[in-house]
Image 1: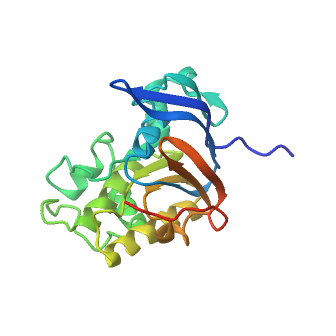
Image 2: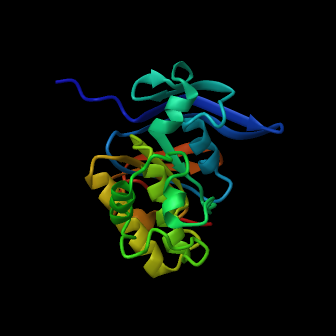
Image 3: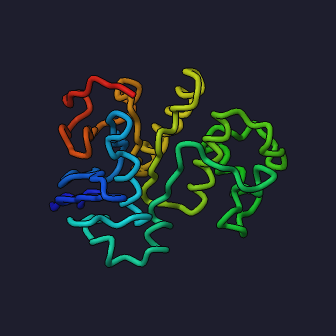
Length: 226
């Protein structure tokens, strides 16, 4: 039986911006299903790599594949529906929780709103509550739910715990782990591999725009850093 292709594969990918080299001949794979950690110090190219995966940017050279197909051969709107992205500090766009979940998906029913909130552990909140008073962890999980409303195959999370205290970060990572258990592929960008050790089965380490290690999380070497 043939193994399924990885969710993403990058082959010899290089990227420059403003004359500065950001990524250099990056070759790596994100397995389908489960959580993969993309780790490295600040400025190593993690967020830039993330933007290549749903074509917010294209590489200068090399190729990026999604589920075995070159991303350039996939309709960009379909790609972004299939591949959800939650930014490091997500901006909430609507006045209420329910309205936030309907951004990009206005036909969500009340039952569907409730199911999304349960999935991210926010079902204790009134869907008609204003988004203005949410804590950082609640806002982060609401952004997850907003992305999930489009039923993506992959979720890209850029430093989802960096602005949170330890307790809120643990809650967010419990939610991320539940996504993987449901079959969703999740790629989490972080500078802190130790925090992801119990969540991510696979890890990719970037330093200076190059992959320096990749494999099972408990086998890769990364000393950490900001």
